[in-house]
Image 1 (cartoon, helix red, strand yellow):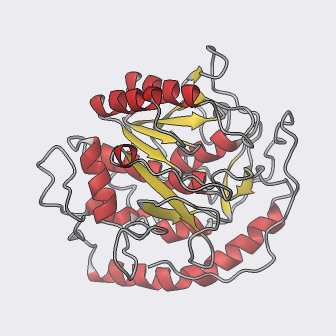
Image 2 (cartoon, helix red, strand yellow; image 1 turned 90 degrees about the vertical axis):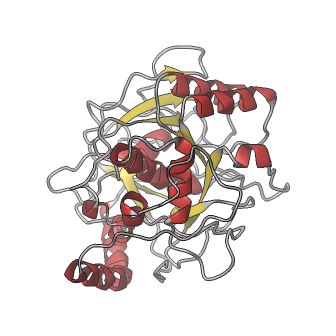
Length: 373
């Protein structure tokens, strides 16, 4: 269950940057452990797996491959928007921030790390202005390229608005190559949420929850899962430090990192079975699932990796509701420590957030108006 964290007025508010303006270098290093990591506790999983051998494609604004916590694991990628060239640079910082949540390595004196710190990152640039939706053809080409280049997890940082022929063909290629596609929901306030059952069956749609434990505002489409989405810390481009931001796209990055851990730990599972595992092991909401705003519930990282699912010998998703998994929990002493940490994360998260806000003397990555937040 999501622990409520009541924080008011602690986030700095900055105006969105101009479309042609790059986010400034991330220089301030945050030593505190971010609240999202306190909640998900990836360090409990790392003795089992850190995502080695899994490539996660980040379909976004590019990923800065020179960032200290990502260096050596970011491939050259492809600038789909420009029709060629590398994508291991990033102007807006959105793709780098998301990639950090997925795969940033641990560093001495740094609290933040990605969920799968040994995974590789394949950047595919489909936008340079994160205030605008990328062309549908670019997103489709990026998904297809990611699958063809061997990415086992594909994180799409922008919403899939319409399931046109190109996108359907790309998702079909991803499915045939056994790649799990993770997307963010449409958040347009002025138009109804486009829901395509054909697409929904082939992707994992992720929304965010905030420090108050509620689903983030602006999510207009049903989701499969929720994950931390506000007051988040991650790496920024052109510097050794960190930035503070929020958004459903970053919540999806947490699920992409979890999927990388699952695929590394259970390499024989198909993409469909990984999706089933993520849904079945979620921390369920206290009402009928799937809930339109919260899906099957909050990502449960430990359960996603360690759960025992007797139905994992099939090759596809069942049409029946996803049953709650039987989770192989740790011993009593460790489990008690986990429960204590879950209670303490409310207080610790507030303190860490306050310290982070004070430490970060840089603007947050700009928000998308009417796009996934």
